[in-house]
Length: 165
Length: 295
Image (cartoon, rainbow over all chains, first blue to last red; front, side):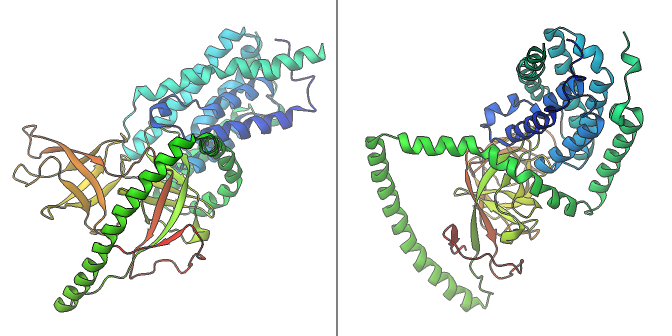
C-alpha cells in the first residue's frame, strides 16, 4: 500500500463521518438473541481503519469520542468503551505505517486482534464494576467483525488508490 | 521500518493525547459510579444518537412492513378468525373482571382499606437491544418528554420486563429483570411467600436466592411482584419456577423463567402506578396511550 493519505485530503471527511454513522447504526439494529453473540463491533473496525489510513484526521481523540457515544448508546458506565477505544485507536495510529504496508490478510488479523483487545478491556472494566462474568462466547463477534475489514479496504483504500493512479 | 518515527500531525497519535484520554476515561468511570453528575451530559448526547437509532431501527421496521404487505390472504383470514375468538374470550373475562372489581372495592370499603386508583399505561416501541451480550438492556422510544422517569416499571402483555435506568429526552434505557445487576422483590402467588429474584445474564433464566430448604415452593409456582421496595407495583406476574434443586448448601437453588417475552417483544408498556403521580409532566393523550385498571 502506497502512502495514500498524502494524496487524499479533500473527500475523506465525508467518508469518515458516513462510515462511523453507519457503524453506529448497525450497533443499534435489534438482533434476535441467538445472533447477539455474533454482532460485530463495526465501530471499532471503522475506527481502526481510519486510524491506519487517515492518521492525520482520525486518532486517539476520535477513538475516545466514539467510545463515549457508544457508552451513551448502550447505557454502559461512562468511560467504559471510551477507555477501550482510546487504547486501540492509540495502537492503530501509532503503528499505522507498518499496518498499512501489511498484505490484506495480515491487516485483517491485526484488526481482529485490536477489536478483541477492545472487547477484552471493556468487559474487564464491566467485570470490575458490576461483577459481570467474562464469557468467551461473546468474542465470536470479533471473527465476524474481521470479515468487514476487506470490504472497507476495497471500498476506500483500494478504490482511492486506483482512481489516483 | 520507521514506525517509531511517525509524524505527530494533529497530535492524534501522540502519547500525550493518549494519556489525557485515558485519564479522562478513568475520571468518567469513577464519576459515573459515584454520582449522577453525568446524567445531563448523557441526555444531551442522546440528541446526537437519535438519528442513528432511527436508522438502526429501519431494517426491522422495513421487515415488518413488507411481511405485512406480502402476507397471504388465507393466512390473514385465519388470523382474523383466531383474533376474533381470542377477543371473545377476553371480553368474557373482562365481564367477570368488572364484577370482581366491584366486589373488591366493596370488600375494601368494608375493611376500611385504602382503595387503589388505576394505573396509567403508555405504549413504547423497542428501538434497540444491547450490543454487549452480558448486559440485558433495551432502549425504548419514549423519554422524559413523555414523562418517563428513572425507576419506572416496564411490562409487556405477559409480565414484568424491567425498569427504566436512564431517561433521555426522546428515549430511555431499560434494564431487564434478567440483567446480572437486577433484583426484583417478588412473592409466590400461591402462598405470598416473599423472596428476591435475581437476574443471571441469560435471557431465559432468573434465580431465586436465599430461600431455605423448608420454604414452601414448588416447580410451576408463579412469582408476582410484591410491591415491596417501592419500585415495581404489586401483583404483576414476573416468572415461573422451573427447577428447584437441593445442592446440599443452606439455601435451595431455584431457577425461574421470565413470563415476559424478553426477546421478542416489540411493544412494551410503561406503568405510572395509580395513586401517586410521580411525574408532573402528563403526556398528551394519543392513540397509543391506554387506560386500564390493575388490581
